[in-house]
Length: 106
Image (cartoon, rainbow, N blue to C red; front, top):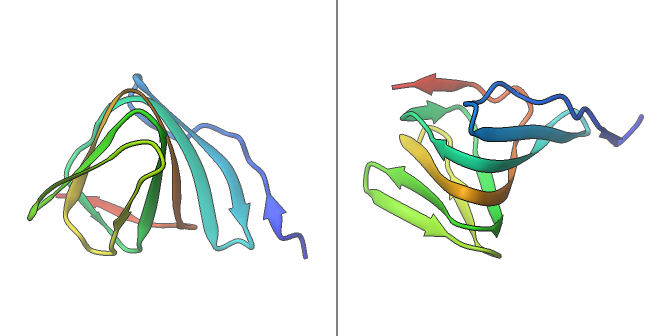
């Protein structure tokens, strides 16, 4: 069984946001790289998501208030947490999430 499959096909995203699927590991975990500017919509998802910032700044707004992360910092979004992401232009981040994660806009 192959432990790492790569599929660089871009995902659907706003025109100012470039999100590329880097790899699927053991069919369970998806790695994405994102860059550009994003003002995301409020939503919930059915599994955890880990966001690691390499360049620029990421802000994730939760019902309890915003969290920001810069280079070398990360934000963990728990399954079911109501949130939205605001990514400054030029930010580069890595997203780690479960394969097939479902998002529900709220």
